[in-house]
Amino acid sequence: MSSKPTVGDSMPDVAMTTPDGGSISPSDLKGKKAVIFFYPKDDTPGCTVENQDFTALADDFAAAGVALLGVSKDSPARHAKFIAKYGLTAPLASDAETGGLSDALGVWTEKVNYGRTYMGMVRTTYLLDADGKIARVWDKVKVKGHAAEVLEAAKAL
Image 1 (cartoon, rainbow, N blue to C red):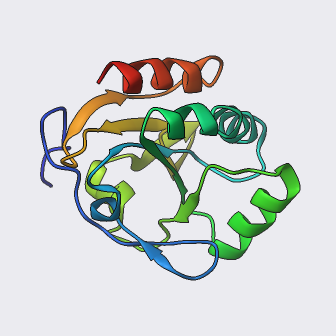
Image 2 (image 1 turned 45 degrees about the vertical axis):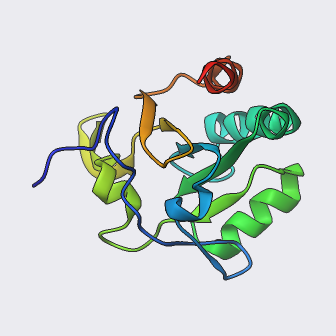
């Protein structure tokens, strides 16, 4: 297993599926700063708040020249329902393929909850510079205040 990409490395360029069935990959975001946030599951309490917080600040990210992309293993159809239910504007992508971007980054990993071991997404956010290099990583994110903290870091980049 290769080591996880970290600050200074290029973001692996792995295509993901958009809710409309299209495709997006990190290289599509080159030319401007980008935030790619990985979260466990659509329509769960923490993930809903995180997506709502990024949506609430989406105009501020856009004004700062920063692209947003939320990623989970949920299907494109589930993303579409999630977006519609909460009026989300931060774009989402489905990273359902084995060997996808979350695997390449090591954020899809073995987790343990109440003694049960399973594969799951570690809530992680990546800030990329305009060249597609990783400028900052937030690992095991706590949702409260996170989107605002990422916005400040993106503005400072």
